[in-house]
Length: 119
Image (cartoon, rainbow, N blue to C red; front, side, top):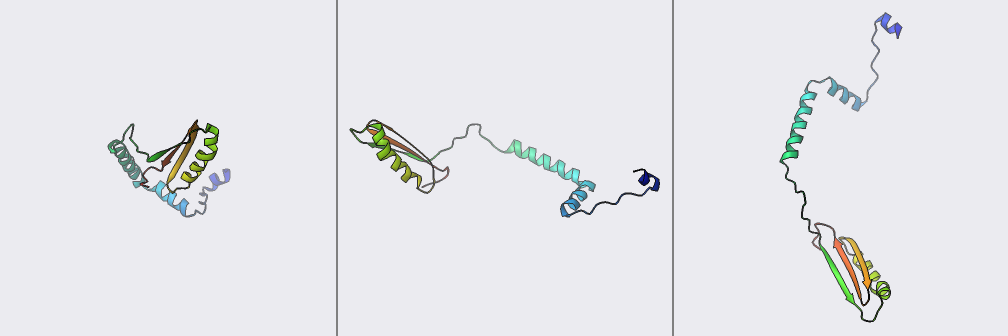
C-alpha cells in the first residue's frame, strides 16, 4: 500500500460483467436519485389510492352431500360411503378440498371448489 502512495498510481478497475457495468453506470449517474424518488412517490400514491377491504367477502363455491343409511354405524358409513364419495369428489376438476365425516345413520361430505371456478 505504501508503494501505491509513493508512486501515486491508481489501482486498475477489475473487469466487470454486464451487471457490474450496469450497476456502475447507475452509481455514477445523477438521474438515479431522481428515478428512485419518483418510484417511491408512485409507490406511496398507489398504496394510499388503491382501495382495500379489511374483511373482504369471498364466496367459496362448494357443496355438501348428505347420505342416509338407516341401521348402519358411523364406522360402517365412514368406510362404505364417506371415503369412496370423498375420493370421487376429489377427482373432479376444480375441487380444492374435500372433508367428510360420519355419524350414526348418516354420512356428510363437504366439497369446496377453487375460488373463482364456476364448475
